[in-house]
Length: 453
Image (cartoon, rainbow, N blue to C red; front, side, top):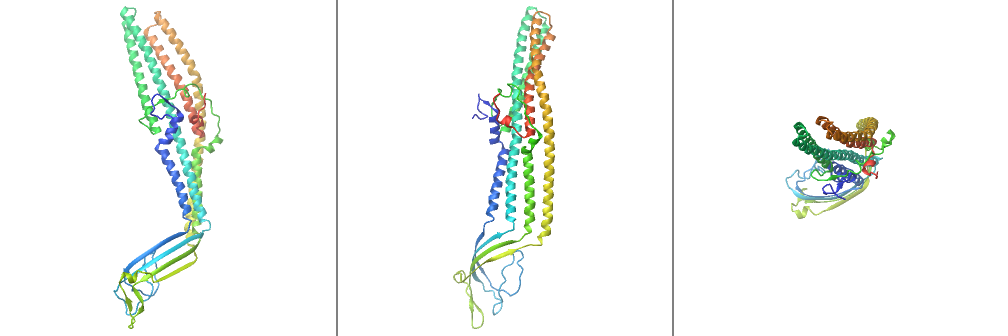
């Protein structure tokens, strides 16, 4: 398939859309966000597996402790277990060691895990709908820019043909004025018409280049050079699309809002279940070493050995297995209010959905009216062009016979040029009105996969 930079080969609309999907940053960004939510789901599932941890310590310090209670203060308090050793506190320091293996599995969560999974899955649905919406909106931009660039390119051709006609008139006028058959003012007016035609051609070329830059931007290739396919969208009028407001349910924008509602509802359910208890299966194994001997001297004092070889090797090991439960029942007041707040956010999301549905229905009705008007204008444009061509032929013959003056003749030139432009614009307006209706319906299949007409 040719890319946008392939010279000499027309870039079809289907190819332009493919380039936009592959290159435009917002599309690629939405795709990355969708993939991120899939990774979030995998991470959420992994968090439900048993938690296992290994720990090891090698410390050098004193061992003065007292009996009594102590508050962990969110895990910041050091160990104060055991009593004061015989002989009172001392500044003697020894090496100690600790190795541990802990496994914890929240086996029963009363639906909390399931609710968390529902949130992650709904987030994937929302991210996918967001990607589809961004893709749809950008496709509409590309198609509109393509159709606009197409009609402006055709306008350049019309203005070039108009310049050729006026230049031919200028050549005849100069010959007639030199021979004395026509007054000199005819040659001057012909020169003015040529200058006017050149200005029109230059302006149409400027607009064409500007529109190509815009189209290249939407394709993600602003510096690319390309030709457009004129066969499909300027060769004739398209068929009308038959649709109804019932089809709006499949619109990508409404689909995104529905997924947002799903996420809000899933989050509300997940918050509601956070106050429920959990039942966990636990197992732990740990071993310790210390440079403080368990044997005292005859005077009742402990024996200290500050050597690492005495304190670091494990001297005793322990293990346990069991079941534990934790229920922060005081959280019920907090979670009740948080759930209510999230449910209200879901209501707000529903209202935004309803608002968008109203907007799309109004847009669909407006597009149908515009399409009808565009079809009527396109049917009248050939009549205007045929009349202008006939008037040009008659004016040319009458001017040659001396029955028309130069002012009347140049007016026919302007009429013919305007009729040629209107013929292109009215056909293009039908396609753009059809695009507006397709955008309102949420179905671009008539543009993304056009059939042979």
